[in-house]
Image 1 (tube, rainbow, N blue to C red):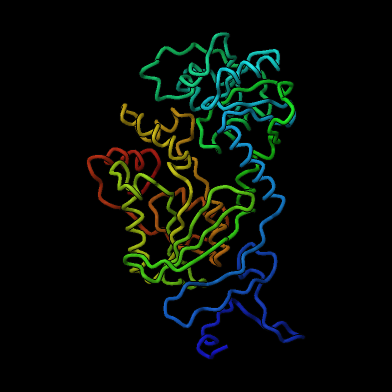
Image 2 (cartoon, rainbow, N blue to C red):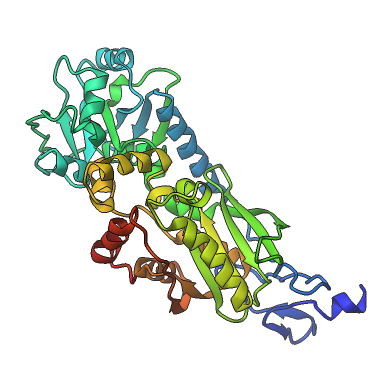
Length: 417
């Protein structure tokens, strides 16, 4: 190996191993790795990408469960039923994609009409009493069509179809599969509302999954995440940049790390967690400040000498692009950004940061200076095992279109603007 390359070879926290006298890494050199991991060779060129870590192999059992959940979510998206086992199982159909024919067929197989499962947030909007944890289940009355059920689940129809209810929610304990069905609809990017029948409605060849598999999706998604590719991508204002791509084994959305000026792994790295925003990042929407935050973060990181921007597949604070567009329509009707999410049936913020923490660990970083105004990001990263040594302010001027949005984030979500 040429001397110039040898001179730039990086071994983190190397120490001699006694009898054999061979260099090895401390087990903590990359957080969470169960075995020593070498951080590879730096290029002889200045500001080259790195460090190059050898990724931990994803958990194969977690990857298999991720694949099951991804497949079941795809089935719901296609308007087909999914059988969800666990305790008293259910057969589930997404309200958003259900057809009258599918509802009739499953009701005939079950010998009963379905129940409509809604989140507490949507139920509260519809003035439904919350007798059961996490979700409510409303008996579907005879004559309710698929379109009528969608009007109940979709708040964008509340203005044009306001006379809904009154509804009488079930009071008995709901099966685990009922809660899991609503979560699966969320993971599919659909409205969080499902129709549920007793398990006897299941037919031969129907997609099947355990409620516990759906419930474990977030943890499994983290355990199955792997670094699948990286390449130099010079950016305007940050020419010495590399993009690394991550994907869970078994499927699921991809996330990306924008690594600027090869930051050293032994110091807290300046880091920005950025949730993807098609409308703001790509189209330059004025309804949010996402585009300004993205470009401003790249500029700030580059000028500071280096750092990482994690570009996370969490559109619309985790509800997906289509549901975000629905939320925008509700905002046009006078609701703020948090009220809009909740009327749709989601939490005010559905994002989780375990994936971001694993991405950092796979790249070899365990401590960050976090570029954010959101204290929840600090708490989320720290809960996932990343040390946050400093919160670095990250704010941009408002405009007439996003002024109310930013005010809501400050007053209701605690953003430090």
